[in-house]
Amino acid sequence: MQGYLDNLDLFTLAVIFVTLIISITLHEMMHAFTSFWLGDDTAEREGRISFNPLRHVDLFTTILLPLITLILFKIPFLAAKPVPFNPDRVKFEEFGAALVGLAGPATNFLLAAAGAAFLKLFGADLGQTGLDILGIFVVINTGLFVFNMIPIPPLDGSRLLYAFAPEPIQRFMASLEQFGIFIILGLVLMVPAFGDLLSHLNSVVVDFLI
Image 1 (tube, rainbow, N blue to C red):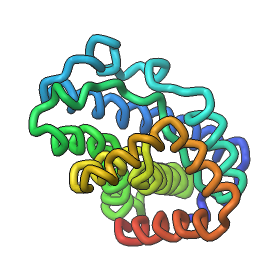
Image 2: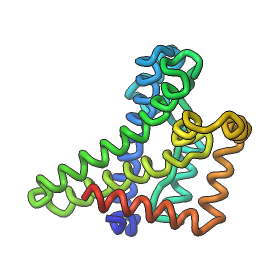
Image 3: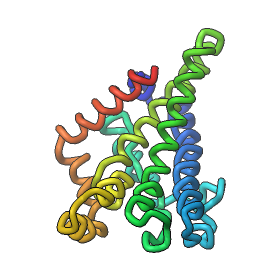
Image 4: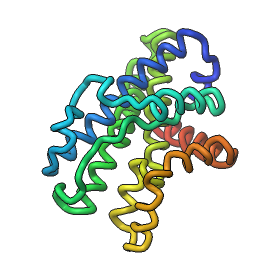
C-alpha cells in the first residue's frame, strides 16, 4: 500500500491534494462538532463546524509540512489550524477534552477503514485507477490518524495523555504547547528513527485495515 505514494506524478499529487482537503476538513469539523456537543460553543461561534476547507487550513502545518514530509518519507504528516475550545466548558472535564481531541483522528481512522472496506468489497471491479485512488485515500487517512495521535502538544494525542497524566506532567505539557509543533517537525526531519517509526506504524495500521 505504501507504494501508492512512491510515484509522485501529477495524477498522484492531485489525488493526494484532494484527499487531504477532504480528510482534514472532516477531521477539524468533527473536533468542532464534538466540542459543541459537549457544551462549548467556542468553535461553533468561529464557524469551524463547516465543510469549507478554508476555515481549517494553516499555511505551515497544513501545506508546507505535508509537502516536506511527503518528499522525505512518502507520507504526508500534517496538522490543520487548531480548533479553539475551552476545556473548562466541556462536559466531563479532562475526559471531555480528550474526546474533543480524539474526534479528529478517530474520523480519519474511520475514513481509512471505510476506504479499506470498499477496496475489499469492490476492488475487483474498480480498475487500476480506482484502486490507486482508494489506496491513496486509505494511506493518507491512516497517516493523519497516526501523526495526530502523537502525544506531544498541540497534537490531538496529547489530549488523551492530559486526561490521565498527573498534574506535574500536565504542567510540563502545557509549557510545551507553543513550541510543540517545532519539536515534532525537528523529530520528523532530524531524527530518522522517529520518521521510520511513524512510517512503520502507518504501514501496520494500513496492513491491519486491508
